[in-house]
Image (tube, rainbow, N blue to C red; front, side, top):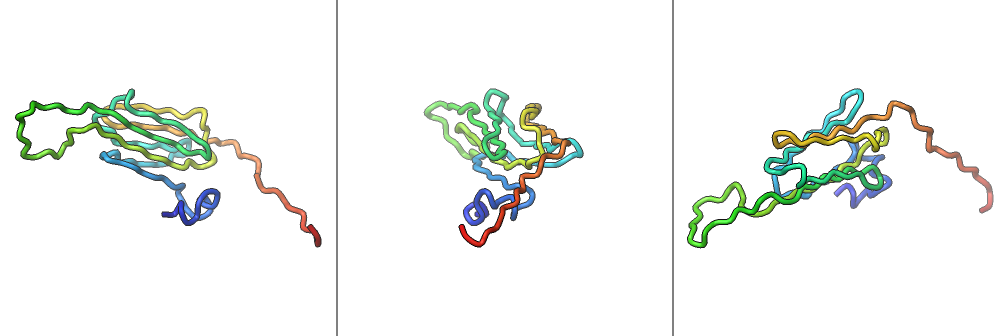
Length: 141
């Protein structure tokens, strides 16, 4: 909802921490915490291996995390289901997270272990030059 109202580029002015979106049909729950040297994301991805997961950075410092696949369980035709809570179809998830501006995009690392995807986004400790530019005001355009 905030995107529709504030939209990019005003999103950074009104939303803190940066916005994130989720489209999920799974339990890809996420934690995001910050250390003095990095932003760290931990995403539950049970049943997905590293070939099923794609992590990318797009325009506007947007971190894309997407998981597709998993095995679709097949059963004999005469199988009668009484309860199906675990899911038997292919599954997937997608997340988009707007990263802060003080990160090193070329040094992002990701790892999957025991059903948890860990993404480490190092902070850039060098101060960036200000993007503020003074505009001269005249009496006529």
